[in-house]
Length: 154
Image (cartoon, rainbow, N blue to C red; front, top):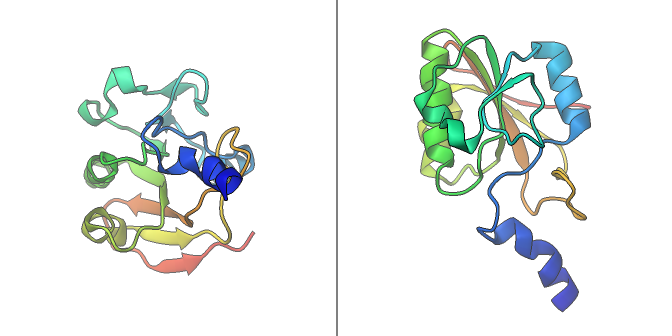
């Protein structure tokens, strides 16, 4: 039990809220969307030439073009989902990799307004030795129009 507990600690701790998107998932999405901006990155895990780090304060920046977002999964996730939705109203396309937390206020306030793609299985983020203990989804905001839930078949 201790070994299992230790392997999951990082997913439930507040040590880090930033997890690198699996490269194969990024490649698949980038082939479709051709991203211009990585809205939530570090210099070490940025997937686009143009990116915002925590120090750039992505929420205070203007997002243009096609934006990928793998937001911090802590308490601020709702703020990032609001920003992605608001920027889509202003013309950006925002493609968000988020935990599938359908029981949260941010999910019902923002995620349901986009096109939801539920991912099969559990993702392994960054250099994690185990998969995440939660399912994930891609939420796509296309100009703020309501989307529909679909299952990603890959």
